[in-house]
Image (cartoon, rainbow, N blue to C red; front, top):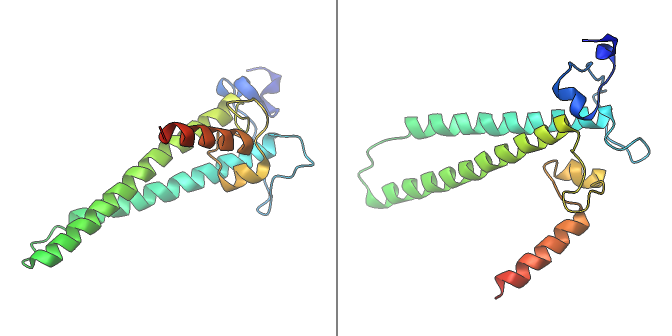
Length: 157
């Protein structure tokens, strides 16, 4: 590597070179008055996404353990039906979370590729408030609303 390895790298360079560790104070929050998707903002969202993913994976592991441990022979039909309903609900929740982990992985890839934070439809920046609330967002609020209106019109047909 050349003498730029200690610099903070951007965009596609990240995929091929080691980037310097970004210092991020614990109380850091992205602000509108700093350059959009600078290294600190990217690191903030990367950490937020990784923490979210780890929480989901921990929940998933505990669910699997619970389902394995919870296999019992329950003689009462109503109790058994209730337990099966609970299991089905838990499995649906885990399936939603599995899909969410895939979206988190996609967002992390967009960070690495320098595309994170920009609307897929318009190319415009997605607001920091929206990204903070939904770090996996791929559309700006306006583009998302337009998409949902279009979906609703087609669903009514």
